[in-house]
Length: 144
Image 1 (cartoon, one colour):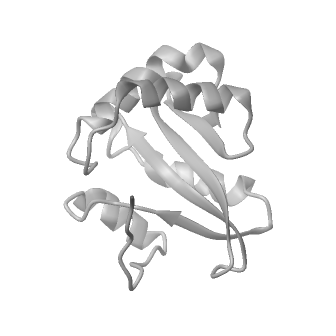
Image 2 (cartoon, rainbow, N blue to C red; image 1 turned 120 degrees about the vertical axis):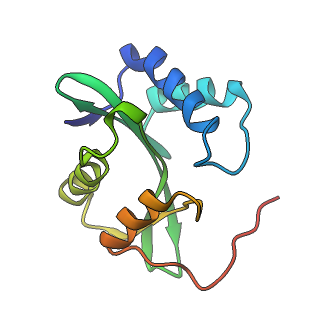
């Protein structure tokens, strides 16, 4: 089951975010305060970001974070799948696929593109995203 994140999920979310950022699925560490700041933003509004809890048999199994932006290149609104984390004991149960099915059914019609980042070494995630129709972009991203 996929549902919007709630205040009661704070401890579970913070624990999972720490696990995610200590895994090989991410390229760099993130200051712990960022996890709390993100949770507070999710509770404040869904103007820029949205959070979801992924459950399996009534247990929290993971989370997802989305960010919203506008892209001239895409011709409208873009949803960034910022993070999709499934706890190790729940991997291989189809929960990632379930999350994308949920997105497909629940996104507004004005969304022109879904976008995400993935480490090339995260082979299972890359495989899932390709099966779902995601493609590599022909350019590099840069940050400052």
